[in-house]
Length: 312
Image (cartoon, rainbow, N blue to C red):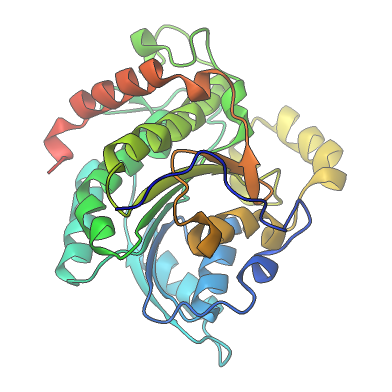
């Protein structure tokens, strides 16, 4: 069984490295990668890169039409692998279960499960099954998917779960996660609730790594950086325009933004690395709350209770 080391070795890559840089020379033929949020931004770039390296990418989009369009947009003669597009609305927990059933029916290991899809900055409070929408989509939908497909990940010789989080996890309510207000009904701030969902991503990877101890599978989280994507379109107009204008000189291209995800998905250096947080293709320190095992345990138990009807 794999022994999970504490420190990842220096990758040799950094803040300007691209997805192509970190996967150069790698052969992913025979590998299956499931990726949520494949239709735009770093998700689309990740799918293109991994498929070009020979991987079989199960690309998940909000609808079958959008997933098909993404598949066609990356398909060309240079692709060594292939894409299986699947539609799944992550807001619908039942649809997440259906997605997992479709994947299990393929009867193959999942070498890498990349939880990439996410939403940011809902200007008005929206609630799904009694839970604020960002927490439901960014955290709970992926929590269901991970638990539904964990056996398939374990079937891989070295399965990996990768969760795209954010340094925005440092912008959270007192205590990190306000378990008494997961609905947002007792006060709502779009950016704080986004940060709370991203903290949940990091804590999930940390707790999952403990569950996977003694197996060959690993779990890690990452910060992709400030990337030029459409994730900001839900912010209020008075924030959206000025924020993008001020940030543009510091924003990463899509290929640079996808680099850390692709590195975690493919690097032979990370076989024994689990429960860590990465940025710019190297280990980074999350907030103290992101390293809080008691908080991770409480989140895991709370999440299980919230979505118990959708777990295996």
